Picture 1: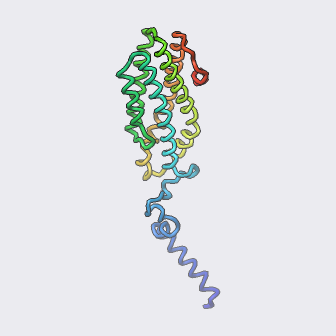
Picture 2 (picture 1 turned 90 degrees about the vertical axis):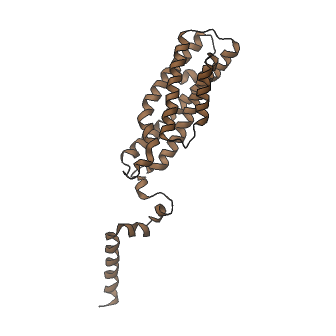
Picture 3 (picture 1 turned 180 degrees about the vertical axis):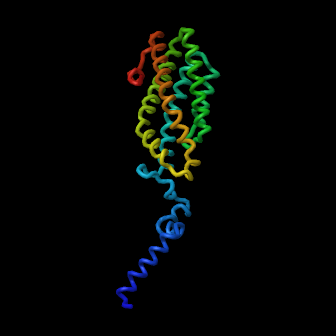
Length: 219
């Protein structure tokens, strides 16, 4: 058999063997990234890139928005005389980090919800605020408005991750708990935040507190 014929035969045999041994093929053709601490190919969304990295960025931005809400609520709660609630909100904001887990995010959202309820109840009492309380309330309103805008800015990243999550490998899903939580909770949280923001603006006007433009544009 001539050398010209042997080479194609050997190449065909080599390719066939590689296709029949997936682990070996992945080790030779890029699987070492997973073995050495990198991301495996199963963590790649078909059209969305690295789904784990997408989650990390989404969580980072979601946490930043949540912290803004918590800090804004803390200032408004203090202005309304709700000292204990203000302390809880501020402490929760300080404890929330970009590496938060599903449980951390859920707990923070629970505190936000409880804060909204207590603030609403206090606002219905229509307490009269002094000048310093009004100034603090205005600061809290502005912080909350910025957080609302941050939530709105999450939509495209949220949509992209939701799409990637729907086609993620089952082997990767255990790593996507925080992102999965955001997919479930984000729409309802955004709606509730818009309602609470509107309520906060209405109260400010009733107290003759100057409403920042950012606050009205966020409603």
